[in-house]
Length: 396
Image 1 (cartoon, rainbow, N blue to C red):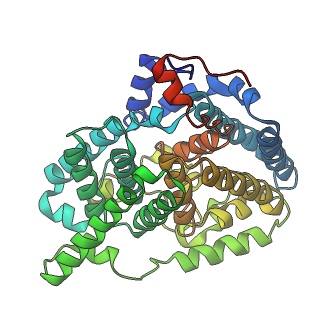
Image 2 (image 1 turned 45 degrees about the horizontal axis):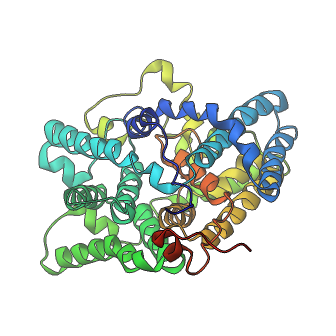
C-alpha cells in the first residue's frame, strides 16, 4: 500500500456550510473559527500577513477620524485574516467545490425572479438578482464555470451546470467578469497541471463564440451587445473622485468604509438597491439610506485602497497580493490560480476583494490562504510503482 497520506477532506457539515454560503452569505463568518490555522503557515507567509495587518492598522492612525478608522480597520483585517485562515484549513481548492451548488441556486433565483417580475424584457435589460448586483452575478457565474471545468470528480452534471452558468454570464452582460474569465483561464493554462490546461480555455471560447454568433446572425440581445462595447460607464469620473479624495489624506487615507462621500459621482444618486429591485420600483428603506455610502466603491481596487487606507495601507495590500500571485504560480493549482489572477485583473475596473461581499471577495482571500500553503513534496520517481507492488522503499 502507498505510504502517501490521504488528501484532507473536511467534515460533511463543513461542505454543507460552504454550499449554503452563496445563498446566505453571513455563514462565512464561521471562518473566524479557523484563525488558529494561520500559525501553521511557513514563516515567510506569516511575515507577509503580519506586514499586511500592521499596515492596515497603522494607516488608520493617519486618517481624519483615527479612533473610528482603527476600529473599522481592525474588524476588516480580522475578517480578511479569517478568510485566509479558512483557505489554510481547507488545504486544497477542491474543498471549495461545494460552492457550486449554492451558486446554481443563485442562478435559478436570478432567472426565476427576473422572468417572473419583468419577463423577457427584464433579461434584455440585463439579468439581475434581488441581492446580487449585476456585476457580482456575472463574476459568480465565472467562478461556477471554473469549478465545473476544474472539478476532477465531475460527471455528466457538468454540462447543465456549466450551461446555466454560461447563460447567466451572458445575460448579466458585465464586461468585468469577462475580463476575469479571460485572464484567470489563461493563468490556469500557463501555470496549472498539464492534464487540465486546454480545458481552461473552454469557458472563454464558448463566451466569445456565442457572442460572435449573436452578432453575425444579428440577434438582438442587449446584454451581449454591452459585452462587446468599449464604454467605461462613467468609471473615469469615479477614478477622478477617488484620486482627489485620497489627496486629502495621502498617508493613511480617509478610513475604511468612509470613502463614499468622496465619490461624488456615485454619492449624489443617494441610496440605491440592486438595478433589478429598482426596475421593480422597490426603493431603498429609509433606515438604510444613511449607510448607503458604506458600499460605494472606487471601481479600481488600488484606487479604492488608496482612498481608504492611503499609501501605508496600499503597500500592505500590494505586498500580500503580489506574494499570493507568485505563490499561486509556483503551486500550479488551477482553481486557485484562476481565482487569484482573474479577480486581480477585474480589480482594474471594479473592486472584488473588498469585504464584506456576497461571498466572492471572501473567496479571493480564501484562495490567498490556499496559495500560502507549503508546496507539496513531489513523490520520488518510481515510488508509486514500488508502493503498488507492496515492496518497501529502500532506506535513504
